[in-house]
Image 1 (cartoon, rainbow, N blue to C red):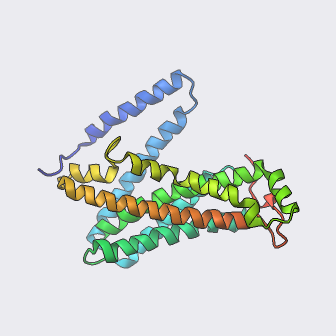
Image 2: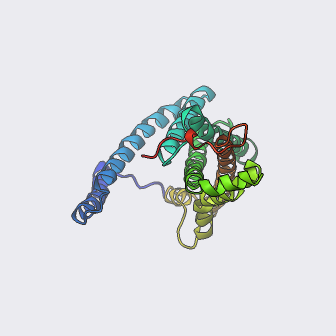
Image 3: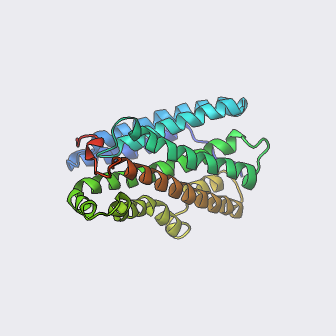
Length: 266
């Protein structure tokens, strides 16, 4: 059985559920009604636009255009990481310390999976490359945002303890070791929870989509296991690189804590 097509009327019916939730939020004064409606509108517009772009890209597959779209995805992910932090690093460091790890982890593992594990022909086939990169990049984005926010917030809150360790002669790496470890743990919690609950509490999105499209269940399971392992590796690499880079930026060459390198609190 093939895919059951959806009409725009079907989507409108689904949208009424979000509108109902927004109405309940407004009645209870939860303060999330505007964000909920804007989020739903953004998701609709963005996904429709992406659908049009992918339709053209699938018909005219080339490394150049796939690379352009991939770089655009990294740019948007970097912006989201920066926006989700209370006290991001100021200046170009705030962008670079997010963009670099996202690019390195997501691109390297996507290319590795395409060339060695999955092996489509050609290897950059957009039906595989773009969704795979999107899943790795999206999860790495969440991990980096959570980890860096925890790191910078904790550094501000524990400034006295860090300065005390530095005054005792500890190098900055030792003074920040506990904060870095805690930040990495926070960054990896979502993917650890997702792996622990997969198949028991929930069916992951990619597996569900493949089953709905008619893929045999065991084939969908194998793809989902592959994707979850790749996501775990990508989030771990991105979080470690970003948190290490951000921690180093918080200290100058004389190993003094420099919280002035963070953006002011909102």
